[in-house]
Length: 403
Ligand code: T4K
Figure 1: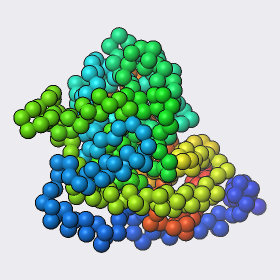
Figure 2: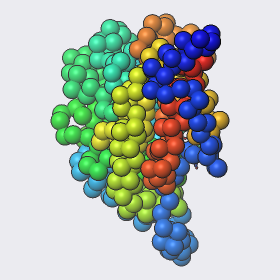
Figure 3: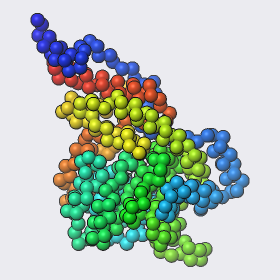
Figure 4: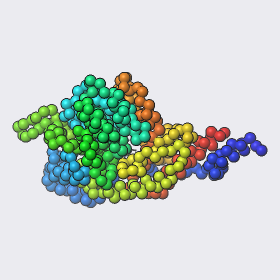
């Protein structure tokens, strides 16, 4: 018996075959991105551009803006919807109208824009930890962070998974706090994204329509609120506070969506149900191939939201860290993303805050989550190749550990 035989035996016991069966996957010919933009029919978009050219109305709430705003409102089915030029400006506009002061409790497990919106208004972000299972803001951790200076709570519906809105609503009510939701990832479902339970929208929910979102207008965003008075203030705030030609009410900014962007949104909106169907089939393929693999947990993409397909890697059980897997996928031209790493509380400008420490669940999520490609221009064969690459990587790492 040679010295390598016991490890070979252990390897084949683990995987049901030997190291020699490990086939190196072929890299994709061109980069496979997680969510390249969904494009409308070119001729239809061009014909809308012709209309825009003829009308010479390029921005300031023209006809395409109105059409998109009402199309989105109809799809959501309740609340008041205002369109904005991107999600970040919409969030800043919303926070600016809520008369917040002092501290706003926020999730660290989000895109930096969420926390920057608080900081840019001169407010102090206070980080609370997330729930280890769905990775949204933990209501218990929020309660622990409330002080006399707290004026609001900002949660992110991460990967389109809703926050615990019922508990946060109650906390907001009990402590007279504003509740704001960053729903940047939430517009990826057939049905309206939010239930009509009291408090499901918070005081306001923001949506992002960036090109990489399932629904997009190249750049864009929206605010949804059930409070008519707030909606009026948001509309003023997005247009410099201008109420009429000779009447400026309050402080505002330029949050208007152009006609060219709105026309893109109008045509993309027509295509999103078909895109959701395609993504659902691809997600099913991922699920059937990845379920049951030691160390992999599917955390988003298999439910009603098809914005992202996300797995979590338990390095010990999987035999490799998330980062090592990410690098292997990149070598094969599979452009996985480590959303949301680094954690916002670890970014230089926030790391000094007392609340930036002791966020164990968020820290672990930032080290373990990996977003895989999920979009209607890939096919199930591509999903198969991604999964085979994941398996190949795992076997390679485990076989190395046997040496
Ligand atoms: N809150 C949350 C929770 C958010 O996730 C976001 C944005 C916001 C707030 C702010 O909303 P916006 O102000 O953006 O409306 C991307 C998006 O730019 C950003 O909108 C999104 N979240 C974030 C999660 O993803 P990056 O820096 O990762 O983008 P980038 O350029 O690396 O692109 C991502 C991938 O998409 C790349 O692999 C290439 C591919 N891609 C990208 C673009 C722009 C394309 O194939 N085509 C394209 O046109 O932020």
